[in-house]
Structures are given as C-alpha cells and as structure tokens.
Length: 218
Image (cartoon, rainbow, N blue to C red; front, side, top):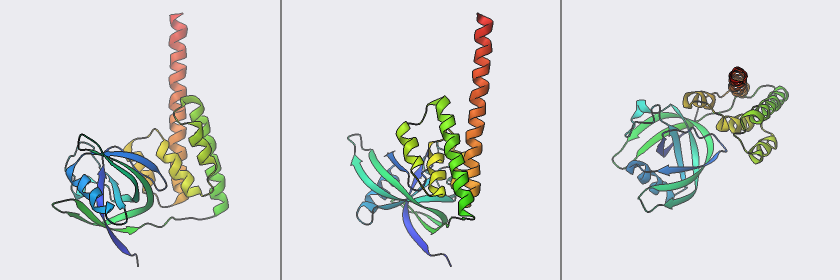
C-alpha cells in the first residue's frame, strides 16, 4: 500500500523539473508565493507540477499534469518588484491523488512513484549509449556546457542519467512530461535517445538545405 503525503503545490508554466535537477524559478503569483512562505517555516519541501497550458493564471485540477516532483527549496530571495526567486532541487517523482485549491495556496495529496528497473547491466549499456548520443548532438548544436556533459558522464545510476539528459534536451513540455512520467527506466532511456536522434536528424537536414542554398547562390 502506497503511503500518501501532502504538500503545498507550486504550478510551473514552462518547465518540467526532474529528480536531482537544481533550477532557479521566478515566482510571481500570490498563491505560489504563499505556498513558498508556508513551506519555508517547516521542511522546505514543495510539490512542483507543470501546467498543461502556460498561459493559465489560476490553474485548477485539470490544468496541471497528474505527475510532479517533490522538491526541496535550497534558497529563497524576495525581489524588490514583489516576485520571488527560488532555487529548488528535484527529489522524487510523485502521482497526485487529491488536489485542494484553498484560499491562500494549492495543496496536494500524493504518492511516491517507484522506478521500474530490470536487468541493470543492459540498462548501464543503454545509459552509456544515451550519453554518446548526447555528445554527438551537442557537437553539432553546442547547447549544453562541457561541464554539464562531464557531470552527466560521472553518474552511475541509469535513471539519473536519463533524467539529467532529459532536463537539458531541446524538447516540448509535453515530450519532457512524457519522459518524466515513464517509471520504466529502460523505456525512459529509449525515449530520451529517440528525442536526441530526431533532433540530430533535423539538424542534419537543415545543414544540407543551407549547403544547397549557399551553392546555388554562388
């Protein structure tokens, strides 16, 4: 039987936060600021859940995804314009089972989600393949720092490798959320690899088209 927990919820507009991911967020909505203030007086844990539509200002139950990330607040800074800059670290995947839109802030009851891990050796091989795909992609789009690549290469856990790569991919919110919700680590790694292969292929096609246009102009 899954243990049910409860925490204030912070809806996110344009980002999916994965476990072990450290990210700065700028928070301006009153309910979200109230939620942050509430958790700062206790364990500094908050539930981060992505909105389906970033333009929704007052999200209800159907406006957010069913899965989110229990996270810890590392730092909170109140800015002069009334907004709050907060540094958070993703901790565990959770599934929302109850949603309470209260006057001051949103709170949720949730269950932790377990990773599905089969055949660890084959997972390590797949994770190594994912890192190689990331290096190849980054050699042509230069969007990820060499330090980030090095940090990912030092990871041993295939699940963490999948999450870290996914968090840096140039993918849509729905694609990242789909990866996030995949409990089976093998399927998650394959999903990450597919996104990278697609982007590498698209960049290759764009380069060939630019090459042909340049040749015709000459």
